[in-house]
Image 1 (cartoon, rainbow, N blue to C red):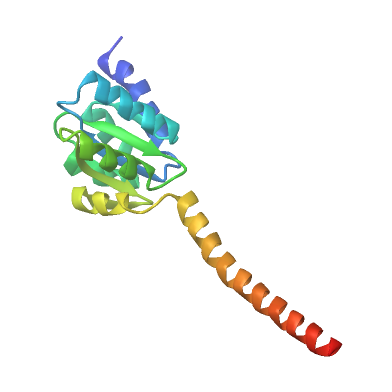
Image 2 (image 1 turned 90 degrees about the horizontal axis):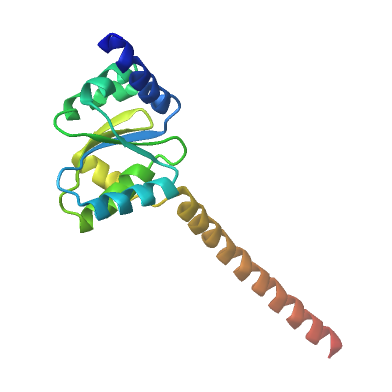
Length: 166
């Protein structure tokens, strides 16, 4: 079999990952211990993020003609790719958080919802809470005024009820 025929399935696999992906982040994983790598993969898997090491050339071929083509400048040296189809901030958030304890893990850059971000910007995106946390905060902020309004109405009703009896 020719080399091209061996590489086509890998390129197709990466292209399928990119298809419909909300975000993709590339990292340099050199220096991670087996334990660190296992823990990182577990965290990413639990969040629904696909994390795999690919050859840079394969990523380039798969990204050609997509928004993920912007990753090209970051495809130097050993590269691992983290892709999420559901939560756009999950790969950046998990990788940046993990990099705090594993200083060998280096974020190179990423594409989030069609826009390229360098390593600094990916770290900023990593600080954005997950969708679930944001929805919880929104719901909490909506419940507080409603609860206060209900208390005031109840107090008015009690006051009017007691003055009607007198």
